[in-house]
Length: 121
Image (cartoon, rainbow, N blue to C red; front, side, top):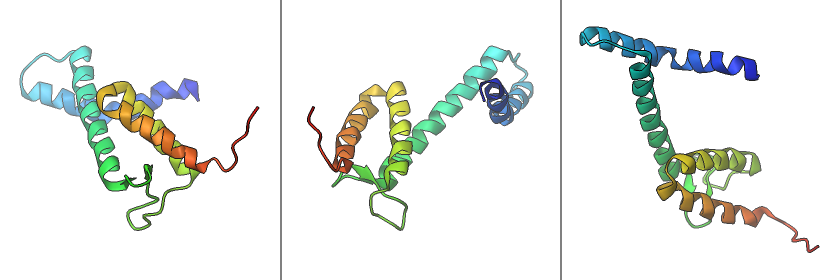
């Protein structure tokens, strides 16, 4: 999988990069790989923030600190979905710790409710 990762990144970024090249050509400004990458990262970061905000406002269940299974099923999701959400929140906290580190800590504490048996060693 590691050897395919650069290809996946390029394929994912290709539409944005091509769009940046078109915009640069239209504006008669010289485009460099660095300027294209910066434009792509800015757009990606803005999109990631928008998605994270949507997830928080649409699926977060503040009464229990977990996330709903779907728009129609407002029960907390099972552990698979919780793992996916935790990964998303950890990634968001790496980029915006001021806002998402408290969210991550609350969610981690809320997941403790799934622990059926407490073991003492």
